[in-house]
Image (cartoon, rainbow, N blue to C red):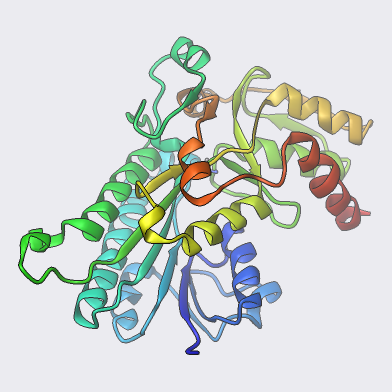
Length: 335
Ligand code: AKB
């Protein structure tokens, strides 16, 4: 059996670090890319690390025989709202270049490269707080009017992926249609890891609050107590990427899927933190700009398509997240 070759961009980010660890267990040959050097925790799992600006490194990748690409590199929502043009360059141009490379190789070597793309709940834009409060769990095709640069970038790249995967050059109309790349995407909720800290995102208040409480540090939460969005444990996020990667193409009825695990408010995070760490000192000091971003995201998402098409279900609901994953791991980490 030939060993599969995988590219992971954004390998130093939170998803990247957790994913590279899991991929290595499958014996894949892993090429990593990031503008940072690889952290020690995953150094041994990468056969080669390409360090630098992805847009300048793309040419290098045309020579590799990748079976699967996980394109995780991105500028997240809060950062992207401050450096908008730079975010567009990273999020859109970087993705487009990588899609073009994967499309070229799929066609030339008649082997569909699998392209896994993490999209986000930021692809939604709820319009008003009343709409957010009354919408319930939203479906993939609803409320697709993002109100952030990051959300616009993600939604557009979902469409680009669909285009390169199905219609590129309208060659699907030919008598001998080419091999297209195999694009698959998940709209992730806020993710929480016990091992790494997020940066640049807006769902960061959840993990920041919990990590601060576990270290006896005071924390000012940048959104209102009633702010509610969906969250997920990092192991479930990794599980979902691997499940979608493994899913049979004929079972997939769409290219972009919601997934969900639990949806709680910032106040519920505070209550859970205080229960676990009674000295936790958490106050609320909403930042208007970041509050606006969270207010534009749905309270919850409907993941019935993922459940039906590729059997998705999370291992961690809110109780299991705290009791079986986050608290035991975080206590070991900071004890
Ligand atoms: C962010 O907050 O920007 C990300 C996301 C929800 O995509 N964590």
